[in-house]
Length: 557
Image 1 (spheres, helix red, strand yellow):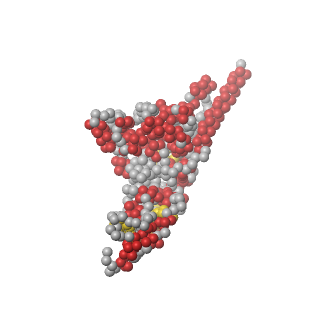
Image 2: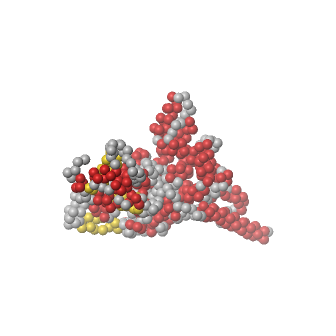
Image 3: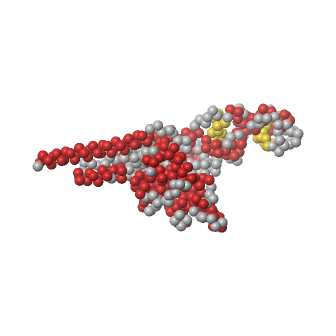
């Protein structure tokens, strides 16, 4: 009898161990295949950093205490215990209409771009479980957890031409409306925890506004509730159906909802489209930890035993080298790293959270100058030194918080991301550095250099609606033909220079040589400045000229 028990126990142990190895190897194999030969995305420069972030592996199944009579149940529920995808599928609620041409087009696109899907799932891995849980708590369709794929490809640093930021792509105004703090130190639109809460609140409100029609709510999330309401009213007046498929909506919105439905179809039936879903664990991917005050992010990374890039990828909301002095006083960390951080942080003296320097104020220095020099904010300098206004006196001392590492160490801070974006080589074009002057805008600068206004904003990690600041440095990439006039254009940036740009409207009888003689410029300059290829001009045509004001003195216009 004892022999049989020992034999049974041995068989149980061997079987469980072998099964566990097969399961874990399978899961890891899926991960390795998903990450193999993944090209960098072109959507956002920070996405390359995101794709390289170290994401912890799913926890192994604890098998040492499993009873043998539970083995079959464990085997049958393997996918449910290891992968989050069955849980997501179980919560799908949106109507299906996979025969619709728009939907089929999107399904075909995702099925064709398998490496894109691999990249997206890799980025989503740490955050998917949290978003699923939050959607389930509110009894929302789990299709919503796929929405960041449509919005941002799950890139935490995504920034659109419309000034939308984060995985949920909030514009500044809507973000503030839903409680997302935005300042020099911190942008809540990129905070995974806070932005998810705000996005689900927003989606719930839109769903109520459109009386439970999720298709219209999703369309409104993309184009605004007013746009969808006007489209519904228009169709009602014409006695037409008011469902999503029959509304006259912006082109982007008409593709937006089908993209989400296409993702639902692919997640539901990945084998039909030969797509291997990444093995994402149905377990928390991160933990939120509390800190008592502002902390240097380099120090936080050391306490958590993480590299800086990983820390920033879990905490993309922090713009600078430290957390916001006014909060939130929390960090998001991988689960295992959170335990290490909490232990090390509890042993850290309160005066070691930041480094401080005692600066003696020199003649002519201002709070603004000091804030730029020490990479902090004027508001924070006022607060820590009990300064009410802007006046500081030479000879006095001021306490300033400073980073423990050099700027380059904070690889995904706002400054370093901008530098990386501006340094991307744009084809064979020539780089020009432009210092913004009073009154300049993207439009005036793009005209000055004969470049596309939207490209100009993109080269500098900005949106067209972003405000330019005096003395701000912009990078401009011009063709060789355009850059050949760089030496002339540089003079316009010199306050003491005499070169000015004017517009001239061509009149009857005008020619290139006549205009060139009139303004003492060269015909070839007129060709370059206005991209003129032929010899002839048309009356009414507008030309841009760069003229020397001194040489025009006394001449008739």
